[in-house]
Image (tube, rainbow, N blue to C red; front, side, top):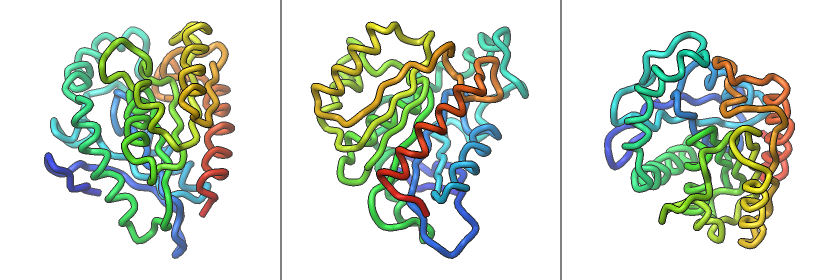
Length: 244
């Protein structure tokens, strides 16, 4: 699919049940490695539970997906070469771009004839979790749920750190954190910041995991943690959006 944005057209994939019904919408933000078969499979699985899932290529300004020349399986040894491709695009994907795109993505998603009226959910992986929080904070009336898995840092010293936006959130939030990404003390601080902002949330370390644990095409993959991710995500969506 092609999503009109202020900066061009973002290519995207969409998955939804094969029926004439309308389905709650889910905007799914990719991880740093881009839109690829593993994300398509995750979108299809989510659609199988009754949702219309839109997965935009957030690096569309550079090129359509597949954006990177990735190995079939991203090993620990391959990561430096992969990140040499990825990091310049991550650095170019500024907060301003995220917010401009978020407006376009939500408009496009909610205008699809297969999408039910009402609020949507935003799900993100890695850097996509940060984008999910920014999107929900900018559109509190449109986003009912946020889920972020192995998120990029949400509390930093940067002026535009996502934690400054927590008070703008009205969505219910689940954060599934890789054990290697944050200390228990840092997770506790994140949890307290969400609580102080009045956000209904869960903030959980997934035991024994490293960054990227949901992605089956990488050495970081953890099958048990991926299942835990589904066990947290699906009830969150059902409780906030219902199912199709």
